[in-house]
Amino acid sequence: MHDLREDLDPIWRSAMRLGGASDGARIMMFTSALGGEGVSSMAASFACLAARRSEKPVWLVDLDFRGNPQFHAFKKGFARDIGKPGRAFDASLKQTPIFKVSSKSATARHDKLLTVNEIDGLSLLVTRFRGERLSSGETVSLQKSPDWWEALRQIAGWVVIDAPALSQSSAAPTMASMADGIALVVAADHTTPAEVDDARRELEARQGRVLGAVLNRVKADARFADRLSA
Image (cartoon, rainbow, N blue to C red; front, side, top):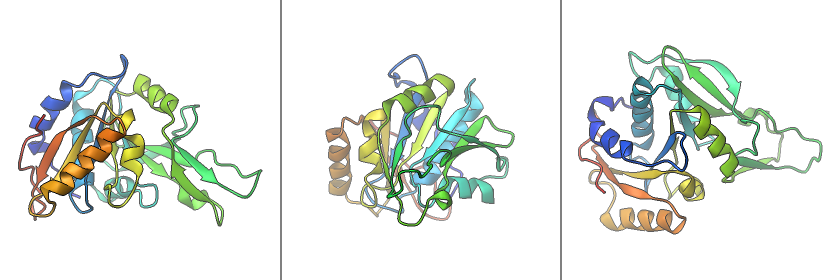
């Protein structure tokens, strides 16, 4: 992952115009049509930027439960001035979780599967799904759980969602209506306009509000190359 903070002011200005569903935090989702577009870099960078500017803690919610790329990126040292994951807390918020586990055992416990880690020196918390706690044969799927998102709004300054590409997962469409705004990350010379438009249509069909596309030059510097368009 790459640190893109210095290039995100146009996205920040657009996101600041978002109106939340309540008086709580704004929820911003980053996703893409295809994999390899730089979504995780964009989401992590935006979350770090928000954490420097927010009075309340910022949550970075990683919907890739299998790989937890955000947690591992921060653990490896996402950026020189950004700390690594510290203490872990239960992220259930005393609400129905944003996932459900299919299990043959009626007595299986599925509490504390989703945790959130403080990032040292920054008012940022990054989620981690503890898949190693699942029993053999158990499977996990996402569910909206509006009460969980509303509870999170009340304690966070911003909520940033890193959702896997639509070609790889149904996570973004599933959670589309929970976000106040969605940015589609597009790698230059990688994704066709038709593929981006198909992704937009799918998200909007699920009541998602797509703000526009972010053109990301996925090269050595992975710099932001175009502004978020309305």
